[in-house]
Length: 83
Image (cartoon, rainbow, N blue to C red; front, side, top):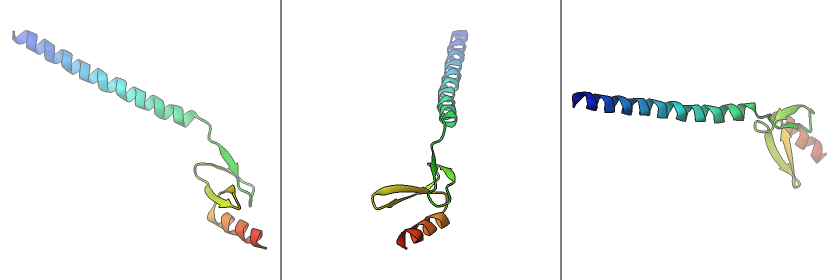
């Protein structure tokens, strides 16, 4: 009887280990697929450099969205638009 209980416990332990390994593999696969996707680049209208859209500063001016690489470019762009 003791052997049977030990066998069941070992099977349960094996199942738990496999479950977490497979679960972690799925999470890693999702993370890797996001890292491999190309990032969308947007052009800064002031200095003409390309920056990743997710890190760019976004400003809406007269109904149009603009993306900037830095706050300085945003300020200079807005100053040019005023004059």
